[in-house]
Length: 241
Image (cartoon, rainbow, N blue to C red; front, side, top):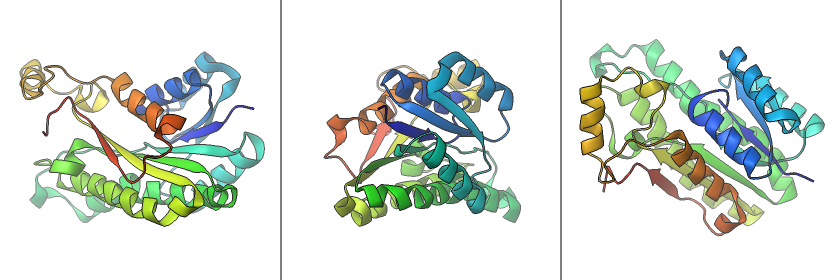
């Protein structure tokens, strides 16, 4: 029987690359989306019966609980949770409104908390499971004009380390992955000069790909990572060394 992985924000970008990689690794994959229904439908059509999409606003804790209950009951026991759903935004610190701050924290940090809490109900009973949080290089180093984003991603790393200590005796690992500059919709608005500058700042002298991030998640989800927990894997080409 195939193991089940749940990927939040799996319809596009890094999320869709993770979904595809985990399908390739032999998982059945459930993924959530919020505003990308067309891409979710297309991805499921491409990947077939081992893939199922669920519309979900991860800032709604009751909705999170309902979707995870449905997956457990009708799709399969969740062995791996990848908290990938998130938003990004650039703004001067003094221009960040209360609404912008709360929306960022609720989506990037609280959403991962709601999903992890709901899934752990089942994982703890089974004494097995893997939780993988997608953070960011800015969660490690901080990013100018992205203070609210950086704070939310740093919070994910802190949650990863603390939760790993709490659930380790239940046979559950908790790790995070921090992508650097990756070719996604979030970087598509950068001009050529900016992208070249970012490449030059990277020791490996290239911009990361979606598959680079998906590969790190694949490793953490595998048996090869069974003795790794509470760690943050930086997938950034050496940018912050």
